[in-house]
Length: 470
Image (cartoon, rainbow, N blue to C red; front, side, top):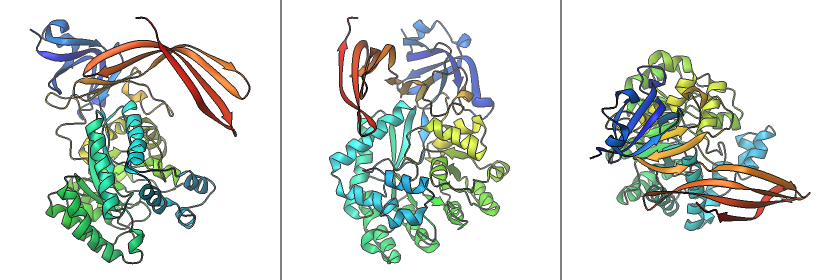
């Protein structure tokens, strides 16, 4: 009688255990039972034939397998595009010019407030699906696109709904202190009281909050204001974190360390004494290269101090419409290596082991070990150091959530293109694998996609697919 639900064999297993390069097990195997890892090690050390040990046997074919990626900082739930912000920034403008044009965080808040719950959910669900297709099995979702009681609550409800409907773990973070709500312009103290006395307690009553964050900066909230918010958070038993030291050394990460917070995020300008305080508190430095790139910042996080004092470094997409419109963890790994100087191993650890720690999930996620969640990703690369290497690539072949295959990349073949001037017709065959009521279902389709040039932009105008006989 099989002992395990499934076993994966013939994998380059990057366990991401900290005791060796990538925690690599050559020609490894990993077994799952009841959603958790039941066994892991060299395939040659399996206690029997794979088919006798597990109900399902999957041959990875020598590809790389890692823990499911953990995206520890996103603003995933919002509505609308920040392309106007991008155009300003790409032509040399900055935060001041964005705000003068009605953009930045206020623009995101205005667009999100004007959208229906259904529209916000559909937009956010699309981004969640993209993260999963890039190997993410756990992500944080911040509020902060509402900055008012009803709007903050509905965005956090959407975060919870994403976690219910998608095969992904979603940690909901309250970021009402992302900026001052427009109704409280010029009254930051009053707005802080509003967050502490009204909005956060209401979100807690609905069980919508897993952690509390804020923007501690002269352009945001003072030390005293943020301290009030974090004290209120801890009165509810909630862990804390902060947007800290992105634009200047404001000693915000010192406050996080004093509260033994999960993470200080951005931290380009963090000082050496503050890094020592973070190390003593076990606070993770979450690096956000997408924002550093888009905002054309010159300051880089002080990696030498993080390494010297043993501060773990996470990396995250910071998915948001203003400064980091991305759902590509591997692109962020590449940027962290090229712009900040992380090694390839540090980059992969930033989206696995240290990403999990930044969300308070180190005991259950982020590495491959017996008893941990069977969240796995198969990558179509021969070695894990290839993941940060490729620019804007997505070699994610398959995603496993709690022992169940939840995503398999489409495999196109025999693709042909017919150029008709202002239209292009693509035809081909695609192999599709999906989960249907917990059961795998694979089939092939012949597809036809038609793209038209509309005002200089190519858009899909129609498509058709026909299932092929098995």
